[in-house]
Length: 350
Image 1 (cartoon, rainbow, N blue to C red):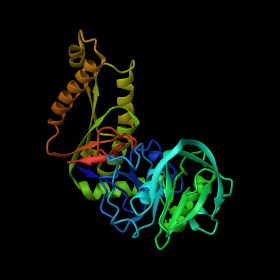
Image 2 (image 1 turned 45 degrees about the vertical axis):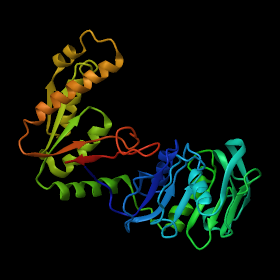
Image 3 (image 1 turned 120 degrees about the horizontal axis):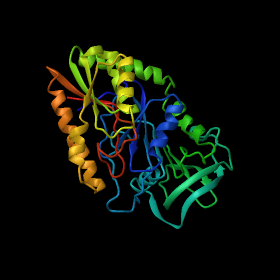
């Protein structure tokens, strides 16, 4: 499998299964900064284009034996690093501090009672600023070289800076809307600490991706299954811009679409200039579903027949070397598995 990524400066987000991980990525994109989410146990090679790393929150406690234990040896002290919630607690507990259960679960709004405005991470973060807490543990102690940079009335170590490193930890979630100065904090990290130039835009992504596709694919043929949805359609358009008619799209009519949807969508694809073949396979799907009442078995039958039809049609395309697949970024089920979430991007498989 080959995953195309924009080769430019980026922030690496290590995912520990937090419900907010995708929101961190969104906030960075709003800062015109490219980022990628990777599972904590599938850390990519640390290349020169990675300008900083963010550790996400997690449903796990750092005190659990089964909790994630990332290898940060190539990151901590070598690159700017920001731990959020679990990430902050992990760096406290595993580098000389202590994490203990909170007397009460800290969930919801809180206000900072102390802010070290001289620290670069906390610039333009106001005292009394509202933050969003979501944890059952709290940092009880930190090593001497961990300097407290913000606190709430109930949480002394709400934020810290490891002196001598560009390493920071915060126990609240700046990516959440309820953290009123969260965007300022993330900008401080991305721009002032990581030195990202905020040059990434969707247009730049398209241009770079198409250029990489051209270089990678050359004159090779690619087969892509179209569903009529946004994700496969976007992948098709990007590939079409790169290789034109060497992209062979297959759009299968399973008989389960809305009235006239197959014809309308097929015509739209052709109007976009895509090299697409519509396949009427309704009868095969109807036969597979006949008499079946169990929803899960219906789903499996639809998937099986689609695979059979797609395989048959793919074999009619001579000398095709690549299978294209498009899926939205937050589709976290069918790819690389961490403890919680995983990620997929638009990808080309060989």
